[in-house]
Length: 283
Ligand code: MN
Image (spheres, rainbow, N blue to C red):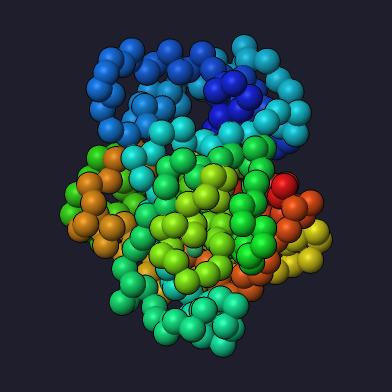
């Protein structure tokens, strides 16, 4: 099932190039008072919401998915976790390119571990990327994004995919420079998630997905998640040793070789097996 958030927080079921309004399924979410429990209420109630989507899909207004503004399918993650240096070919290009490494020694995820991107950086495909610090190099990084479905800590490797709600296409946009990653990768709109969430039942093996990104029609990155150094299960196992994971937490799994600069006016087209295609404008 492809579930999207669009326009003014409507909920949509995507079928091919059509979008069916299923906002009524959000009635499943219990009314919340302050303080809200951690996590995204839609993802936390996903099992019930999926049943209501099925029950109401024939009644919903239908329009073209290209007619709406797609927002991040997760509205309220408690954190955006990201994997640095998790494809060997990207590690190698970073070692060779001073515009990427800025004089730093480049290691792999084995030594870096993980980092966090600010939640305020999160946008959907239809909102686009607004570049900051345009005097510096700003790069695209396409990544497969895991959307956590359950509250979990110390998850075993073999059980890791059981806590996944779904998958989406992620962009871990980056200002190159000497500062810490959490600063350079957390500008507003530097975490794109979309175009929708493909529920976990549709993806048997997240560690064998072809994906690519093109900029103005030129393919820049083209790889497969089978080349991940820490695969999806290992990333979940590892992250959950440090953080309690909550429904809606986003785990960006890392980017392969081919990162490169983006400029205002660029048009990004991201493709991932099974999930589909995401188009993003750069301003
Ligand atoms: Mn990245």
